[in-house]
Length: 285
Image 1 (cartoon, helix red, strand yellow):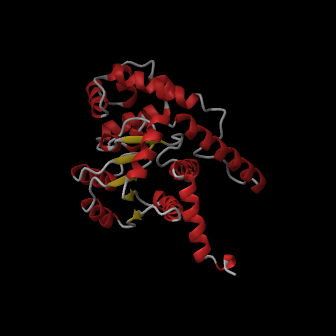
Image 2 (cartoon, rainbow, N blue to C red):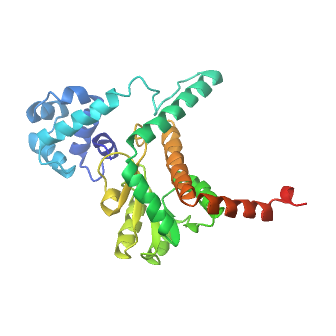
């Protein structure tokens, strides 16, 4: 997860640390040229508090923090000409403009996802999924709805994909897993408490894990054999909806499905075709 998203979440921040984080998010470019003393004056805190915040974010000190902050800012600036992923349209925008904007946003999200996908990580992920007896998917809310489409497609080529909709059920699912399973964990932030609990159990059960998450280090990545990054332009809370990330996650699931299909092309097609004949009344004579 990027440093900007960590600052936005403010996990385990004190009130003073939250004040510093809010100031940095609103004045990122300015902060790059501020010393700890000057930033402390502007946030009514102390240099020691700033250093503690940096260390809480896993940096050695303020200078290391600013180096990563500059890199994150550069990433944001490089996408300024793109559609704003958080607020792609404004108040009273007509529906024609909205629909055209969404087309552009979806195109950008797919392109961005394809650009940041590590092809070797992707290849190894497909091999892991192909070898697994059972594929278990973990996540909360929206990602599980997208995963259900992946599950349906995989069922049609004879792959056993399981999704437990409730958090407690997911923990039981993880506890019953083993090295013959493969887990896919989806979390935009990579810090979702429920999925981290599942990841810890899966690691104990020696189940290989593929993480689908945003760019940057996060807790989830520590437990995964392979990481597939999604379009990471959205903020955690300050946005209209998860429009871009939804398309990005869906795209990754489709790439995984088609990658597995391609490894056994004729067999996959035959299974899907025979299944269609059995269940679709339109194909029966």
